Image (cartoon, rainbow, N blue to C red; front, side, top):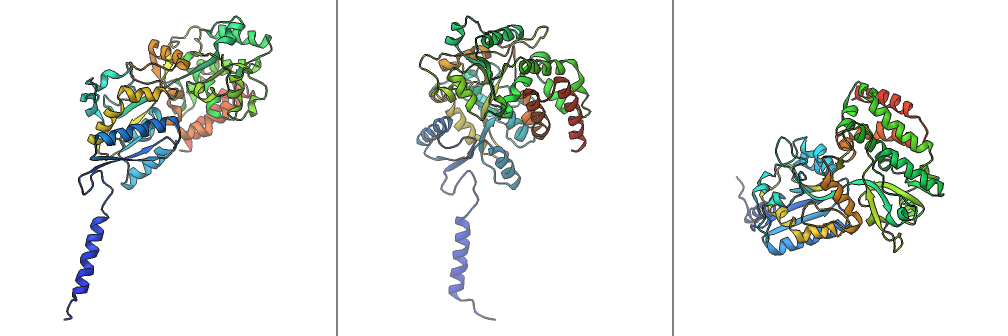
Length: 432
């Protein structure tokens, strides 16, 4: 038997030590420091990214034994998170809209419960964590009473306008669809396009049919029709009525000339410069157009108009951005970080980006104060687009938005829209 050389033994031991030094990317390292791996939806340089980066730096300074290892990955982050969960290498924390986080992770049993945070206090404030939130916002995406989602920003949508322009033309923000049409006619007679629209953004075009369906049939109506494999739900009268009202806007030529081919952000920029009276868009529009508007431009907004005979007239859209902990996350570490991040000073930073804070004690920026009032006074809430893009993303992309674009562009009638969406919805589900 050959002797084993000491050199061989030394090399073997070195290999073992080297492998030990290349251990797994777990939350706790060998020196006892905790690492929170965070994959974020924001891109470097975006206002929210800069606010969250500041939170991370302050948290690490206050907790020297914790490292928040953040990657700014952009809007498709949940696809990467889902793949990482399946491969066993998921982050401890990610963020995205509540609808998408629910559809992609929470309902797929790919997220950890965060109920422990409900018993925590906000650091340096001594306030119970749930008590800082606007009513119903923290619980909006609960599943069977379990909290998986922690909102840090509220977005909504509605019609934006320049208060000075409305005053000049002697019009008030309309409350009903009939009043809305009258306001549009007033601006048309004055030689101004009532509505600005960047037609190349399909989800901006979708605002009209989505909101009309919500106002006529209520929360969940679009989701119900999309999920009906027979397509028959689309035959109910309210869906046609919504399409007819979209067609009414087209027939009355309310949209600015050339809107079908308008490339974002051309239309919203033109609106901010006074070339159109109103724009239906998210509450972020003031932050995107501020550099183009005049010094005397006064940003105001009103809710999508009520529809006569409907009981869904006082619903508000809750488009939430927030955090979720993927499966196998270090929940204790994540909850400690999130409680820290929801301190008032950091939520004031979120508000400074031109967005609403879910904390009831943080004032909205003046440009979107109307949305704060809408949310505070709402009788109930629904998610953006009724959750369609999150629950049925392929149907949304291949069935709904192409047909909706044709409706908004006047390429098909309301009746043709309903006929085709019934047929294509049935075909979609048959091929799944």
